[in-house]
Length: 260
Image (cartoon, rainbow, N blue to C red; front, side, top):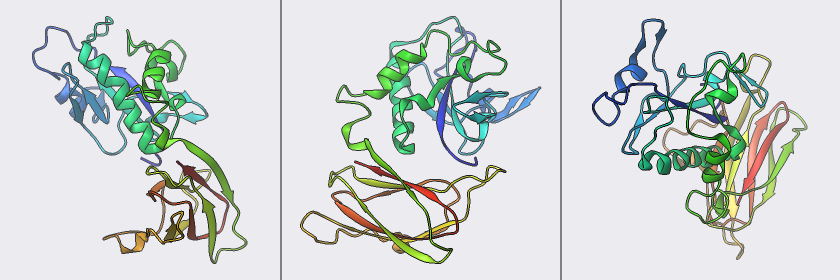
């Protein structure tokens, strides 16, 4: 995938009489005669069990558009939930579907508007009807408060988005200010070029401090296998931080989300 920007919901349309928790697993993994697999990134079984199908681009949406994204297969994760397509869902699925969407959006630091059903994103409009029986507004409302404790959990609230404009393509540092919460994080987002690829951006170091001016430490360079070059957005957890210095090299502007 080029970037990960949202989630599209589907139903499998496999007959209710098919045995097992997720009888569509082989189909969504390997595809069908007219479309090679994988056909989704995640499956949702009748029991509410989540099946990991593919980590990269999956062919789930076809011709599609949502919030300015065109043909969203390589930008939005696809969930194929086990259902015949007549609107029947188990209680476990109705509980798990919005929780799964919430978890994915939390990781992306994206709001619930980045979830849509296949019926919402398909081109031409009306080409698809899935997931039948799962109202988009209902799922978003549930995903916004999966545990009944506030929208996506207060700890993942996006406090501010900062645009950083480098003076040149050398190495520089930008200081950002955070909430000091246990969920504090920095999400660095390179901009996309006309071909959809990320503009060159490197983040070799992040140094964070707590409210007592003690360095709480977050040096990604110390992580095994860390690559400072970003090819999509990357989240850095800095729990307890009230400010942080982000060292970067970039020739063009980019964004930083401050998450609290």
